[in-house]
Length: 387
Image (tube, rainbow, N blue to C red; front, side, top):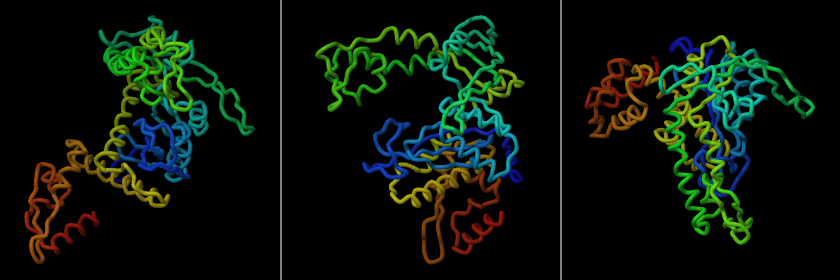
């Protein structure tokens, strides 16, 4: 990868997703956990590491009940041993932003750029975010500020307890009006459900009130049936909860060890996480990695290995094509450009488009001929293997 495609591992992106199995039974790997799609089915967790070109580096599977934050250390340990990489900067979402992960990064001489929850942060961080002083107004709808901040983190130790470690990190905070509008739009369905739940509690139970329950006070569920109990007290919409959340709409925080980098550069690097989100989407939809109809662990491992290799190949193909075409379009074109048996030794290829033409021109794989003999097909396959 490094020789042929100029891969750099100085900056890597990491994220976690899960894949569901349409079964009721759990086993060693398939466990019920926090599903990204809020499904009740058993799942497996996948941690994926990619480079700045969006090409996967390494993945691993974990039992479905594994917390996102617990998957990073095994992945980083493997990539260090298997690939003998130098210093890396890990970019990840807030789900893996823990004291242990940060301590591991720093102990290995590596760096990190992690999202930091503002609403879930301590009072000092919240006050800093809401304090209007220090912000640089980049535009009418966008402002940034940052600071170098020494803080103590509690890291797991060999005795099973936690030890306090002092670290120096840079905190970058920005406000975006677009993020503000998106936060309110994303919250609106939950608010509508919460208000309806207050008026009509009998229509809901513990499962169907998901997303809305946090905006309702006096909400008590029957431990056996999950139904809402209203005999002693009626559910009430929690206006204070809503007001508290709205204060932080549009604000985003990033913490990093890379204090020498400019604020805008750190934000731009972090936004590159969309590549890994797209990789998961491609794997699940275009490469049909889910649902998984397998039970044996070795078959499950083989299934995801095939999906991982397919993802690497299609990413490389998109790269060679100058990233002019989306992966769904590439997959669709190649699926259509298949050969049908005509007679005896002949096959007909009756589909072509600009993508198959680009592959012919750039990769030297001739997909322009309508009729091919078996010998011709074998020559094309042989030539691609040599390449």
